[in-house]
Length: 219
Image (cartoon, rainbow, N blue to C red; front, side):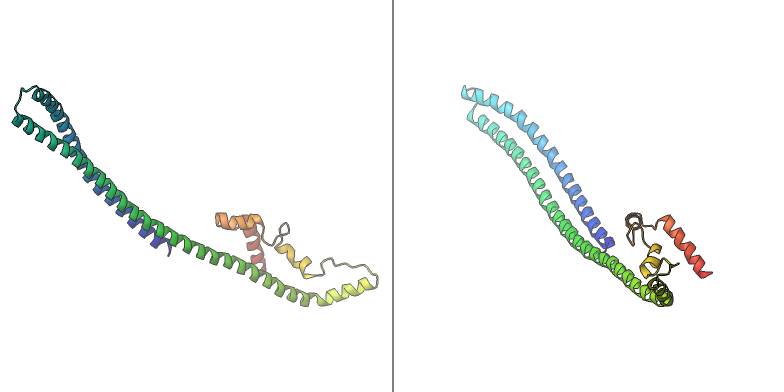
């Protein structure tokens, strides 16, 4: 899965979640108003009913009047409980659906992370292969250099065996070729690899030196 597809799917889940939240928030807002209205009505009826209950116990109102007031009180209490229940249900449904979307996002992220790990291993292999190819090239260049310098090497070796001074210091491929790439004992320095992987660039001095050398070779 490439990043574009991952981003599109994640964006889809985010949009889906936002739509659900907005839908449930609108529904919740409606029931909040209904619940607040029911609570205000219940509070008004409750105070009236308590007063009516007091005078009923004193025998100042009829049972019919009391039962009618009790029915109003029960209905008002029911509406408070019912709107509160609906609010809890809305929040619960909202949470369950959003948890489902979150689970899809987590599954998508885990899949993408697995793909990232797989692709990262491929990239590491490419760097390792480049190192292997580089060292293999060094082996081939050693053979080429030894072929070029064989007569000179033999001549200097013979002089040394005879106890005569030698004018040549670089008598092997490592001494002759390695200075072109060695930096503090490393074929590729920490500075060079950090420039490549951190900043996506070759150090300016190295690029300049390479271009100048390449230009000389082409002339």
